[in-house]
Image 1 (cartoon, one colour):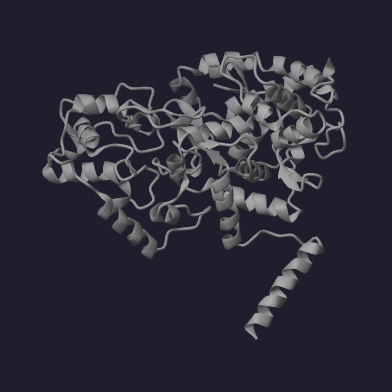
Image 2 (cartoon, rainbow over the protein chains, first blue to last red):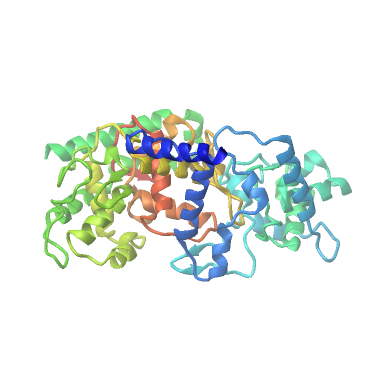
Length: 212
Length: 271
């Protein structure tokens, strides 16, 4: 019975297309077609680099189309995966050197692929400047993310704030599931040590970010 | 040359409109704004139009023929208003094609050029005179200046491309967790000082679909929509987008259909 029904649906759809009644493909078909394109339409200097195109579970959940909202279950899963991803530096010290953090915050390079070559550096830039306001006198800063000016002045530098700041940079989705902010530590864009320098840059009273 | 003058007027109008739309505060906050405006008023990209026109009519390639028999959807050689209907389905290739992939088909099939050679040179080095494809794409698009974007979905493959493009616009991947929408989903956003176009908004997406190919100031050359997409994926730390690939055509189909009604004014001017 069910088989017959399915057959008629297929015939019906084919007949509609033949009759010129083309229409939007359903989400599963769309996904299948688009994923096939992604698998065929990119090149990289090493096959391993093509894996960057594959989505992990969280990215897949966080790719809602249009105004579609995350369900509570999905948000909880993203948070859970994010929590599980967070690793701390071997030293256990979460606050590094704010001067190194300052440089990192203004460095937008590393790991891009162009002309068949990977932009390989010892470490990637932190990308902060692209999206966040930083020191009060800086003009060349983006506004896709919230302003970080005075971050340490507002929040202080208690142990709890240090941990929160580290974790939010390492994997922002632990606190804001599917936020625009990249999961800089979890995706290995930055190392745990680099993140400790950014924590210092955000929290140290001597950092330009906290200039009054 | 009434055509060129009309084109210039349209470009000027488009820019005046664009500047009018920017809040006054944002303008005075932007130290690059003055220089940007001066350049836009005298768009060097205009020079590429004549070159594209010459290339279009020249007998070229191993077969020694011009592109006058190339059909962009309005019939062989008919360029007026052709790009406002692109991307669209073409029965001869059995594919949905954007301007640049269609141009590629013609250069290969009519003129006998080697596809890989053209693709390799399609996006020119910064500071160069630009590629043949860049000049041709600008010339052909300029023949739709002043006309409204009017992409329609009727063939099943057009519906498929549109939906795939929408899916890709929101598909997050890579070490930056970015899809297009992370940077282009809100109004008045910037990466450093560069304005990001709000593409989930009608006016924003209309600005995108009506201003490419454009003169790109930082590169001293004309860039096309294919380049624009390639460059976004580069910045997202993803692998290199193949020129004229289905992924690119899907995204362009999605954006162009969303931008229907936009008045074409090329070359645009970009920082």
